[in-house]
Image (tube, rainbow over the protein chains, first blue to last red):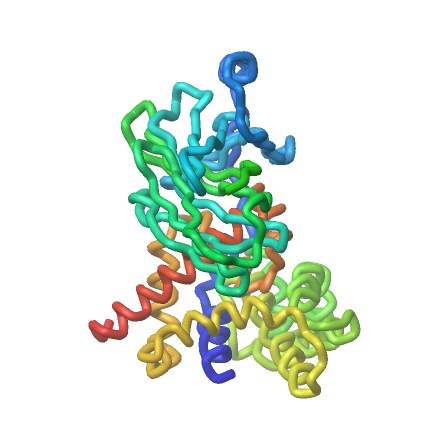
Length: 201
Length: 188
C-alpha cells in the first residue's frame, strides 16, 4: 500500500503542462492518398490471386483507423498494408512471414505478438530496440513450451515435445501488434496495428 | 477556458466571493466529474469527491494562485477521489479503479531500491523520465495513471487498438523500472 501511495502521489504531482498535454492531445492522422490506396488494393488483389494462403489471416482494424500517423519511431498503420501468412516449416514448427503491400516499407518482420489459444492470451513477448526476437515461453498450467526466433525476417514458432494435456491439433491464434520495417528513407520504424493468423502447431 | 477567464475566477476566490464556486463548476465541473467517476466506485461517491475538491479549492485559493487552473482542478478532483477510494477499500468494497494503481505499484515491487527514494526525488525522476518519452506515450501514461482512464477509453481517444495500448503501457512501465533503478544507483 505504501508503494502504491508513493507512486500515486508522484503521478499526482506531475507538472501542469503534462496534464494539459494529455487533455489536449489529438492523434495526428495522415489519410491515405488515393494513389497509395490503389497500390495497396492492387497488391492485395494480386496476393489473393497468386498466393495460396495456408492458414487464413483476418484483420479486424476498424475502418475509422484507416490511416497512418507518424510519431517518433512508431507509426499506426492500416492492417491492409501488411499481410501475414503462416506455413508449416517442419514437425511442430510454423513459419510466419510478413509482407509489405506498400513500397514505402520493406524488410518487414513480426516484432511484437501475442499467442492466444482457446483459453485466451498465453504470453506477450516483444523484441527490444527492433532487435532479434528470440525467447522461450512456457505455460506450465497447460504444460506447453514454445520457442520463437526470427530468421531471414520470418518468425518461427516451435513447440517443444511434451506429454501435455493439450491435443496436438489445438487451434492457436497469433495476434500481431508490432511490425518492424525499413522505410524508403532508410530509417527503421515500428508499425503498430492488429493482425490475426490462425494456425496449428 | 482562456487564461483571462481563469484569472477572473481566481480573483473571485481571492475576494472570497462565493460565485467563484459556481464559475469554476461551470468551467471545469464536467472535467472534475470525469476524473472523479474514473476513480470513485459509485456516482454518489464521485459527486461527494467533487464537492470535497471544490471545498479544497475554496480553502487553498488564496494563498495558492495556480498558473494552470484546469490542471489544478484535475489534481484537486484526483486527490479527493483517491481519498474516497481509500475509504471504500478500507470498507472492503469491490473497486476496479485501483487496477492502474496496482500496475504502478508493481513497478516499485520489481525494484526494492526505489522504495527507499524520497517522495520528492521519486517525483523528479518520474518527471524526467516522462520528458524523455515520446509525446504519445507520455500522454498515454498520464491518461492511465493520472486520470486512471480505462484501456478501452485510451484506445478510443488515441485511435489505437486496446492491445497496442496495453503493450505500449507495459513497455513504458518496464522502461520506468530501469530508469528508476539507474537513477537510484547513480544518486540522480
